Image (tube, rainbow, N blue to C red):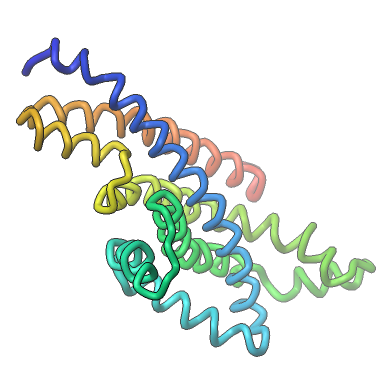
Length: 219
C-alpha cells in the first residue's frame, strides 16, 4: 500500500465525493416528490392516472438503472434530445428511486385504518386537511424505515453513473486503477469515502426511526 500516493490523490476523491453528494441529494429529493405523487394516485386509485403510474412503477423496478441511464444518454440523442451526463444521471436515479419511494409511501398510507379518516372528517376536517394532519404523518412514521433504506440504496446506486463519465467516486477509482495501476489504493479510498458518506446517513436514519417509533407508540 503506497500511503504517499493515497495522500496525493485524496483531493481528487474529495472532489468526486461532492459530485456523489450532489447526485444523491437531487436523486433523493426528486424521488420523494415522484414517490409521493405516485403513492397518492395508487392508494386512492385516481382514474386515468392510476394505470399510467402502475406501468411506470413496474417499468422502473424491473429494468436496470444502467439501461435507463444509457437510454437517456445515448438513446435520446438519436432523436435529437441531447442531455448532459449529470442531468441524465439525476433523471435516471429519480426515475428508479421514485418507484421505490412510491411503494414505501403507499404501504404507509394503506396501513392507516379507514376509521382514522372517518374520525377526522367527523371532527369537521376537510379531506385534504385530514390527509395532511392525520393520515400522512402516521403514514410517514410507518414508511420511515423503507424510505431510509431507499435513500441509502440511491446513494449507492450513484456508482452506476460512472458508466457515462460522471466523475463521482466509482469513476475516480476506475480512473486511478486504469491509469496508475494502483488497485489497492483506489479501492481503499473508495471504501473509506463511501463509509464517510453512508455511515452518517445510516445512523441518522436509525435515529429517525427511533424518534418516529416513539411518536407513534410512546415508547
